[in-house]
Amino acid sequence: MAAKHTELERLIKAAGLMYTFIRPGMFATNVVRWWASQIRSGNVVRWPYAAAATAPIEERDIARVLTGPESLTHADQLRVIGEALARSKNCRLKNSAERPQAHRRHSLSTAMRGTPPSVCPCV
Image (cartoon, rainbow, N blue to C red; front, side, top):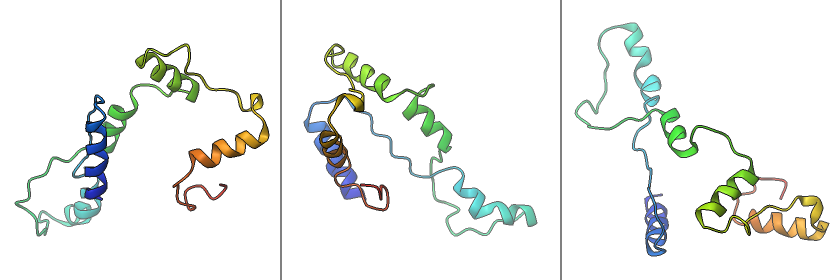
């Protein structure tokens, strides 16, 4: 996984894009699974990594950073991207009814290329 992240980050940097990589090291809720039963049953937690320093993050905090304060339709997302690229007049989604059936099938298969079948069994 680290090799994949490294390669993707290298490509993004090489493209000259503005970026912020967010890669949490430890999720705060993991400790519930690890320690909750021991804390409930007494004052001692037996854990082999007591000296390990981490910066746990709550998953909802990641979601707030990545998604922002609102949900956006796909059309709204494309509008925001178009505005950021100064191409707001040219970036738009076509309603699927505006495209022939064969083109819709091709677009979906192209968009989903590389997606594992378990993620999208309908493709």
